[in-house]
Image (cartoon, rainbow, N blue to C red; front, top):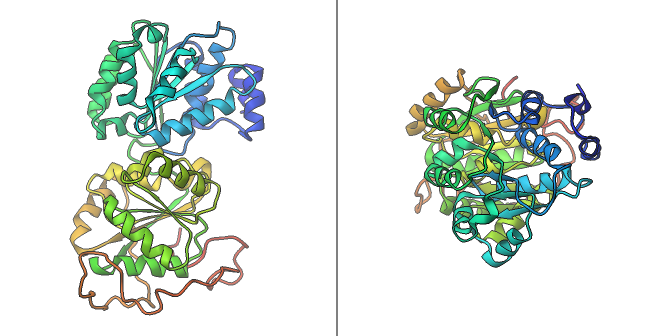
Length: 420
């Protein structure tokens, strides 16, 4: 099915071709037609299924023939990283339309954002806190908003933004259409949808707790004090072109980034201790492939859209199963294949069991025959510090081919991995 068959404006069809969007994904095919008609939409789909285009394209279509100079749509996202990616996508899709957008997020100077709002952008992409601040000062600017989008609604719940979202909704007197997109649908979000949406068209792609198709998952049992050593071993002995490594805390992310960089890899960090400029630089470097590895906290579990991530490695087992689903959703995007590894200590097996019940499958356990699982903890071990794994500080040789696995197609990821 081509995008043209959805009834989109020719200028938007031209943009989708230039951006190499071949055909609509299921969530786009399900959400775009009713949104074009002005109906409310409640969409549930895993990460990486194309939700951004599913709400941007109908909004842009309906704006093309409308007068400019007033704000008609507000899109709310939970993180500034995701807001930035939505606004980038908006610019790409609207390249031939003259429609303008503005981004309103915390952590950046407020003056330029105030001026951007006064210029009357057609679309505002924002995080809840900063948007509320500016709405209190510039309420008339939002009186013309007719369409509201709540993206990653379940993430906004996790981050405590739902009270802010409700206050924002109360300040949009002209709201006629609401589009709510979420990867999961917990009861609180379902209740919010019932309050905000009028006779919505429901679009549900896959199971609400399912992981994306094409992701091979595996659990690596390992003592807590050897997690860093095992991670370094995996990075050195497995062909991983683009890796996203998750840690529980920002302090662990910072420490782990230093350790991995010392092994000779190019590494970026993404966590709340980084300034907005540092986070933007890290995102851009990882997106264009300048950094092979991104070490991040859950701040990247929802707001990172990088098509080429081949591996996601969790160095801890999340307490909330949905966090695991969102983490591994950073790979295998848009129909691609990806691998998701989770390092699990004996104390974390019960948390992993909850995840397995949620996703409906038992993750295969993988032990590496050449890794020394009997290493003693270093004197300063506090749960995953630098290991005394021999040879770990040496710079890895350039990867000219697979580690073993002769006869596989060129470029295929090799190394310790479970069968599909």
